[in-house]
Length: 543
Image (cartoon, rainbow, N blue to C red):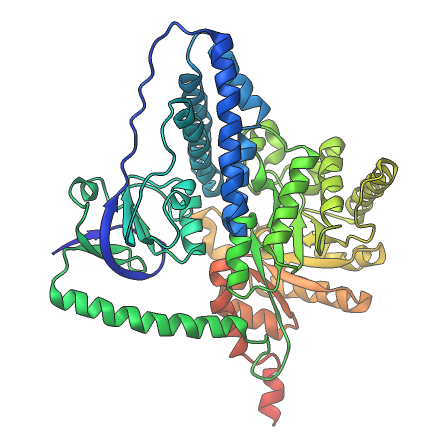
C-alpha cells in the first residue's frame, strides 16, 4: 500500500482500477516538402479538426461546449494560422509548422504566471493543434476503448481527452502535472469526476491496472489499498453521497435570512465554463462577468466573436441574468494588455478610461453586447468610472452603437440595462449623480474600492493590514451608495473577494445589502451564512 500526494482538482472519493493514457511522441521528418501540397493538407486537416470539435460540442453540456468551441475558433485565428503558413512556405511540413507555432502560442500564455485563466488557455491551444497534427499523421483521436469504468492516469489531460473515452467510463483522473484551474479540471468538476493533479512522474511508472483509492478532496491516492482501507473508503463513499444530496438541497433552498429577509446570490465568473459550475451551485445569475479574459493571444476579438462569447455565457446561465463588466485591462491581465502600454497600470487608464480613449474597440464591444442582450437578460456595467462625465461619455457611445445597429438592421435589445461598477471612492461619493443621469443599477466592487480607499495594493503583502473591506471608511462609502440607490429606486449588488468572508457578508447584509456576488466555489458557504444570519438583529433583541 502506497500513498501518493497531489493537489485536488475536482473533489470526490472513488475506488477503482487505473488505466494509463499513453501519448504519441511527435517526430517530424526534414523533407524536402512541396509547400503547396502541405498548405492543402493543412487546410483539409483544420477543417476535419473543426468538424470533430463541433461534433463533440453538439453533444456536450454548456461548460464543455464553450471550451470545445474556443478550440475550433482558435484554429480560425488569422494571426496564428498565418504564422503556420509562413513556416510551411519556409520549407517545413504542415505538421511541424503547426507544432512549432502552437507551442510558441501556448508557451506565451503558460508564462503568464499571474493569470491562471490565460495559463489554462495554453492547454486549449496545444489540444487543438495536437488534433490537427494527429489528423495530418493519420492517427486516431480516440485514446481508449474501455469495457469497464477506470481511473484515468496521464502526465496531463487535455480537455478533449475526457470526451475521447466512452461516456460513464471515467471514475476519476490522476495527472502528474497540471493545474486545478485547467479546463480539463473544470470539465471534470462539471462532470462530477474526482481528480487530482501534480502527483509526480513516478506515479505513472507502474500504475496501469493497479487498484487505487482516489481521495481527490484530500488530494491523495492510495495504490494497492489493503482490505481495511478499502472498507473505510467504501463506507466513506456512501457517506459522501448523502452529504452531496444535502448540499444540493441547500442550493435549491429559497434565499431568506433567519428573520425572513430575501436575498439574491450571484456569481463572479470568467466565461461559460464557470458560469455552468455556478448555476449548478445555486447561483441566481452572474453578478460580474470579467470580459477581458476572453481575449485570444495578442488581439481583441471582433464583434461576431464577442457576440458568440456573450451568447454562450447567456446560454450557460440558463435564463438567469448576466452582468458583463466592459474591458478592464490591467485589473485582469491578458495577452491584450501587452498592447495597452502604461495606461493599463493600477492608477493609469484602466477600465472605462481606457475604453473612452479607444472608441472603436469600445464600440465593437458595445455592439456585441447589445446584440447578445437580444438573446437573454444581459446587463452591462462600466468599471473604474470616476465621475458622471465618464458615465455620460460612455452612454454617448452606447447611443451611437444603438443607431449603428438600427441602420445595419441587426437585432439587438434597445432597453439593455447599463450600470456603474463603483470601484473608486469619488464615484461612491457622487453616486446620486449617476442615478440622476439614467444609471440602471450599481455594483460595489470591494476589491478595488478597498485598495483605493486605504491606499493599500491588494497584491502587496506588506500593506495587508491596511486592506480592510469592512472598515468604518468602507461602510460610510457603502452607506452613501445605498442611500443614493434607494432615493433613485435602482438595485445595488456588492461583489469581490471580501463578500465570500462570512464576517463581512453578515455586516454587509445588516447594512441593508440584499444582492451578493461571489466566486462559484464560495456560493454554498455564503448561502449557508446568509440563511443562518439575521438581517435586522436589533429587531430580534427588542422582541
